[in-house]
Image 1 (cartoon, rainbow, N blue to C red):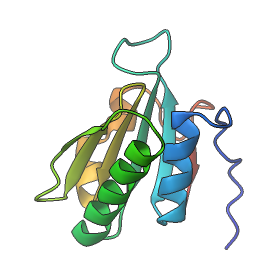
Image 2 (spheres, rainbow, N blue to C red):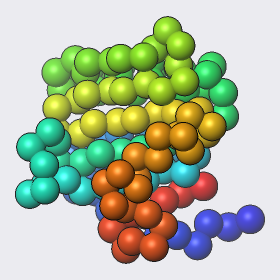
Image 3 (cartoon, one colour):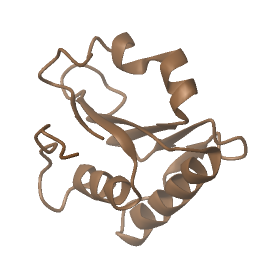
Image 4 (cartoon, rainbow, N blue to C red):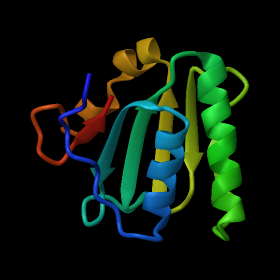
Length: 126
């Protein structure tokens, strides 16, 4: 089934674009990018995505951390990798949350940040 959601826009060559491409390449599910610039000092973007299993979540997180480092950005901080139910990758300007679907549904970060499916600012990919 084709995804009718428009792709998430990112500045070419940016950390944000690198993260989105990495997660897309690794088949992340339900990818959402929340712009935080001017709304929070924690980062410019928060990205939330799901993996099908703890193994996929851990693999996506590990590959993403390596790709960020190899692209010349500072080494990201990674939390939650041993359990891989919810992995947080803090890359400075971009914060990434990778979840197993059940855990993501429980915490519902999109709702906490008031960005649900009805918001035009939340763009997802299946």
